[in-house]
Image 1 (cartoon, rainbow, N blue to C red):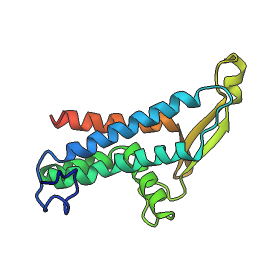
Image 2 (tube, one colour; image 1 turned 60 degrees about the vertical axis):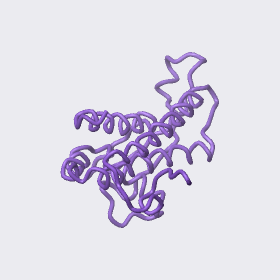
Image 3 (tube, rainbow, N blue to C red; image 1 turned 180 degrees about the vertical axis):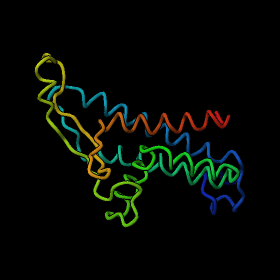
Amino acid sequence: MPKWYGGYVLNGGESSTEEWKIQWGRVGRWFERVNQIRIVSETPGTDLEAGDFDVIIAFFENCYHLRDWLEVSRPDLNKKIDDFFASHFEMKGCRDVCHGFKHKKLTRPSLDAYFNIVRVYDYLEEMGSGPHKNLVKYNIAFAEGNDIRKYDLFDFAERCFDLWKGFLSAENLM
């Protein structure tokens, strides 16, 4: 008998209230990979490579799609999930990153169709950092009205992960 690893059609269309845990595990594994890249990125003179960005993008895609898994596995939570996304800037940003890299052009962004991930040189950090700190930083920026909201890319990923963890905990799912 074959062993199924998830996917509604692949497992005969049967859904369980616990199937979302498959995706949550996946989100956690991608988050660990992002943290490994974060550690490497702190080494002086280190720049991220294309494969590093692939991992970071995959994290945001899997992080956002936990929503889909929860909505199918736990339809009783759909309203709470909608409210969760509506009330957290970071989760809207996670959606835009997921869809922005998937579709190239966002036609219905949650926040900003033109968000960007940018590499910056932190001159202020240079004044007091000493020789053991990488002055190259990676930020993610979203326009919000006339303002720009800028986050450290790794902090933003961590915030998205922690928000999900808080939601799941609040719903007694963890």
